[in-house]
Length: 216
Image 1: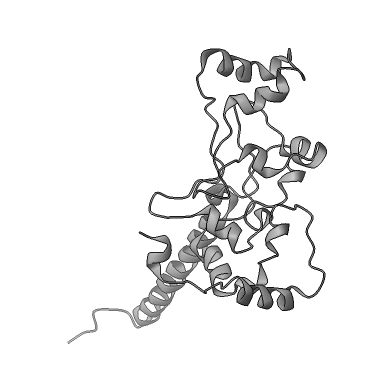
Image 2: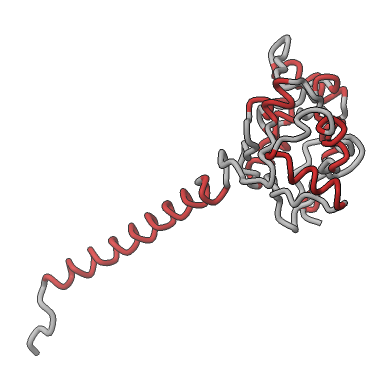
């Protein structure tokens, strides 16, 4: 019986199989990189807001404490967005006629909240409690970055699960004394590993990595 396929068909078949494998692998690598890119994670991308609120000016320049605006951060799972009255406690006197602040004044007049664009937006299936993290010595900067240097607010970290787990598996790399939680320029007086290990014991921090801790 005569040969149906040319001998080169064997080579073509092998090259095609290996080519398909490398193509699939390359595609997975590309998809993984895209998934980690700022286009997806929004890391470093400043969000457009109804009012261009500057943390750099208010926190870094004036020195306003995080808790002045985010009043519930120590007692609630959510940090809270300040009501317009908080803004107007200063801006009824300072820059009271600024066109840029008209949305703030309009909100105050009409008693309608400003529709801020959420920057750190976790999926609905993720539970996160601000208060417990602060009580365990996790600083604002650890998650939100140096907001005192951000003219417009942006996301510093990916908020991906692997990023959360990095801290949950090794909290000693990140925790700080409770009295330093809100300090933007905190630097440990000794090795972070040393002070972190001590605080993990003192604050009774457990390395919680079970799915049910965050997915409830």
